[in-house]
Length: 387
Ligand SMILES: *Cc1c(COP(=O)(O)O)cnc(C)c1O
Image (cartoon, rainbow, N blue to C red):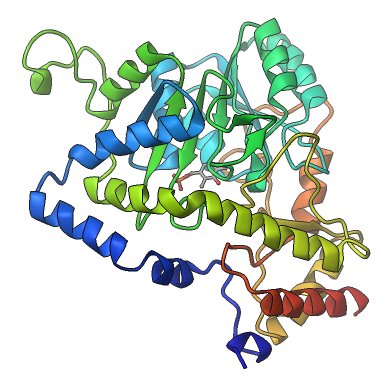
């Protein structure tokens, strides 16, 4: 009998199973870098940028040190600053708002839709009007593809262009997902993604990338990536702008090139796992639903619970007893965080973000989940729901 039939703990994300599947390919890729010695901006960086741009169907890709760097590089290229409002969901990982605040602009918190967890277009419209009343200049929108499903880009792009704003997609959780025939990476003026190990496409450390069809923008972000280098002189010591060190390590690029080869089949396996959860839980709880024409990268499989945090506590306790890990993304919406409480919010408040923070729970999700393991998860959740 496999361990799945016992009560052995189920990993929330199983990177060891992936490691076993990759076998020596990844070891050899790492050793190649160790031996050729171009540890910073080596040939694998160029190769990876081309591979990611091709995978997403866009003209350019700028690799960088993390998903946070990716968001930052774009905002630096846009030159945002004090007086500018950038619209972000409140129900997201902190990095989406953090980089706006770091550049001295105002993250403006917008509510999300309960069924998709993504930015609510009506709340965005109202927030744009509110920002003008507050004397701010609405400059851009950062929709987040939360838990792996693309935001409603056709509608959000429309609102943004009506008001002369750019759109930066935060696809840290959705790399590989599609809206119609278009992959994430091709929405908005640019798309930021993350290769943190727990993301759908992860490296063995920190990494990120910005994707765009605008090659000039790509070049500008390359300059910001390395201390604002540029101009005519010795590139290393000529700095027309103030930048950062936001490079990806060559070794991470080499690892990602190997992982990208198995990524399409991993996306299919995640969909299979999501289908099994929906079949086992859809009759008693709100399971995630994909909008028309959408696929998800299933960074998380997140349930919405009626009855609030008491029900959630019961489910988490029942799961824990049975060796099933759970997680809450995110327990505190950003506008309720101490560091972000002073930034503006949608005029009608953020009731959905607040409700979700008390009523969501995420289950183990990765491409190597076995059916028997999922049956244990499903049973534990069902027991918790009845408690
Ligand atoms: C993970 C994540 C980020 C940041 O990525 P890092 O690589 O950890 O810097 C940004 N936005 C969202 C929505 C994320 O989930």
